[in-house]
Length: 69
Image (cartoon, rainbow, N blue to C red):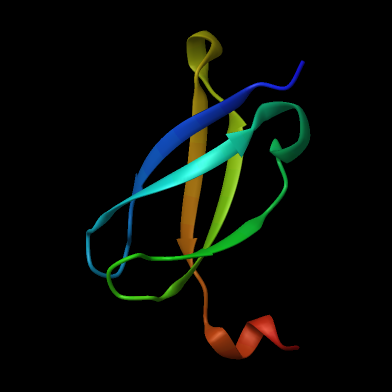
């Protein structure tokens, strides 16, 4: 059985709230790239275990030139 959770995060560029669909059995600790729904900047998202069984979503801004190297 796969556990899919919807998580929210704030874009570090524009502050917009975005959704991220997490497949907990497959995506934990793997970097994923998503674009912000407002400013379209590419972001790095890494889901990690948090305190009390919660999931922390680590969000970082990516330079577009590093994606192609």
